Length: 166
Image 1 (cartoon, rainbow, N blue to C red):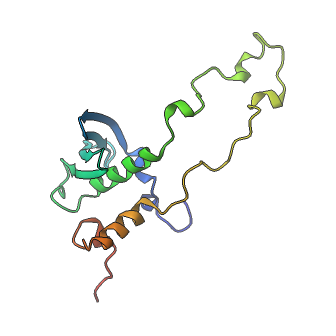
Image 2 (image 1 turned 180 degrees about the horizontal axis):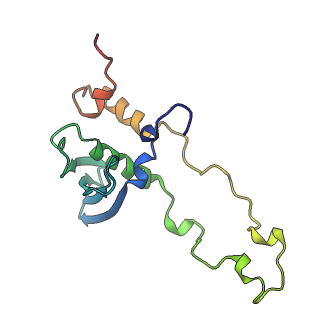
Image 3 (image 1 turned 135 degrees about the horizontal axis):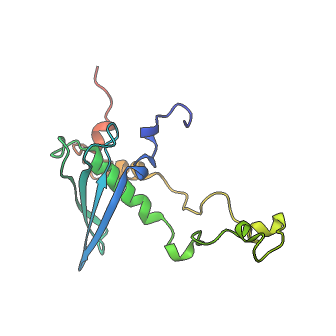
């Protein structure tokens, strides 16, 4: 566990719950569908979530969870899917990442190599330990600031940022 934060509060929590993602592009509109595994009963039927956005304008047109009881408002699956899409949009292109789907160097010892030195196991290039992401605010804080900027306090996300009334 990371400090006192719960696992479900981490930004990357939904990454392991989202699967079977399908992307369909029609002119400027991009439709992304995915399935989200329920967090409490992982063997139950997955929730189908659909996000529709305009890629040229960079606007999200809709995000809907089709199977959740709270799909008409208050669905955390739709928000988790939207956050997952945002994280995937920040990933580097697959062609710029080193391929790991290859035979291990160590497995060639005894066949084509008699022995291998420890320094030959790793690549000669030194890589940064931290991923090269832009140092920016979190996705959640960007959405919060945008909602505050356009004075939209009644959306589903902003209810979590309201001060509790006593």
